[in-house]
Amino acid sequence: MRTIFKYKLPVAERDVDGEAFMTLNVHRGSSPWHVGIANDEICIWFLVDSSKPIVERVIYVRGTGKPLTGIEGAYIGTVIVPDPTHKPGHDMVWHYFDQQFDFHNPFEVSVTNAVELQEWEEGILNDLDPLIPT
Image (tube, rainbow, N blue to C red; front, side, top):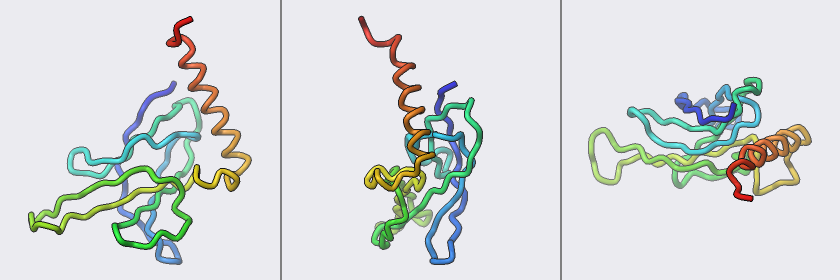
């Protein structure tokens, strides 16, 4: 079944190169839909097919002004977290990226991901068929 699921983003970890990332367990082939704040927590919403198996997904996070290294993947969205002390100009701004698909470098997408993407697109088109007037 296709639906939208919300996931609370965990605290970021750092890899051996110091890159800030987090991992989520989501359904294979899920598409990031939105990143934002819900109930004072940073969350990400994915369009999922709940019949697919659960896989690990890597999400990278960068603060404004921090360098992009090229491993981040496709941009998902930006979240502005208000400064709890309410000092002007001290809000935190975080930019989120999905490493699974880099739509800016389509030739680097693995064969497995390309097949999953094709299956996903075909599923969406099939779901839209009843909505398209004939």
